[in-house]
Length: 149
Image 1 (spheres, one colour):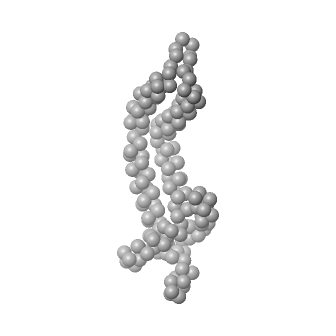
Image 2: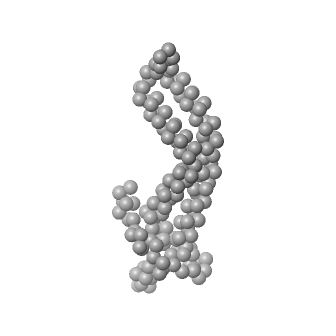
Image 3: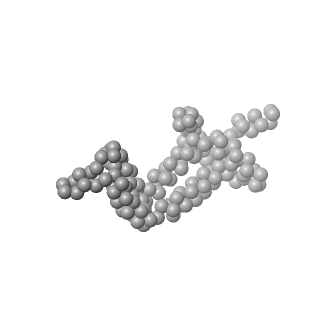
């Protein structure tokens, strides 16, 4: 699926073609443009969403830290393959490590406000993507192909 999406990435000069930017005439025109552009630029919109995701994680460093910490901790616990962790005089079982991770990660995750970050990401992506799709007119070639049908 990823390879098929990579093959449909449109060039930047086509994605940001300011000659095709125009105000829609009606809501019907907006609907036609959004429907066409969401299919035509779907791979580009996926890249826009990924860039906004990276931006939101870089703006919320605590959430990024929590995600890296939890991922590294889970990798470390799984790396033990069920064996106990021996640190000097302390012996911790896998269950104790998971509980310890939960006790540390849950409050940190709550403080990192992941829900507000997700809501911001969804809002910014919707406004950006649907806004772009609504103001980008169809290419001239597609208008001729519609008349022929």
